[in-house]
Length: 170
Image 1 (spheres, rainbow, N blue to C red):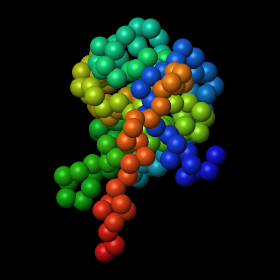
Image 2: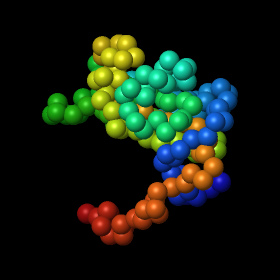
Image 3: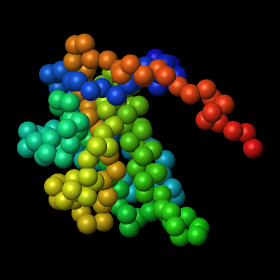
């Protein structure tokens, strides 16, 4: 599938079926994300693969947005190993982890695996619940699985603002 078609067809799945995602498929998705660019190539991201019943139950306590996915990836970053922008007010942690997460989303779609970027949860509580190292901040959760029969994109999925409203040439 061409890249433009991949990003156009991919949607946030909100209902997963019973099929499991094979370990080698998960490994392939993770390998693509491992090559995501990060500031100064610090690679401060850490991806946690959650697929045990116990782990998924913890996710369900954190958010109503697992939608029955058999796998959840939790993307975090080491807040002490980031590039600090000149001026000292911003660091690369969130953006680098977001690039990694976007690679995960697109790699999953390329592998035929549906996903949903989940941000409806408390990141600090997630870190505490899973006992993450003190310096790690959770960016997002990513549901992974195969869409249930009848699942599909939201009605407004294809709606996009005109490019003139989102792009300016300076």
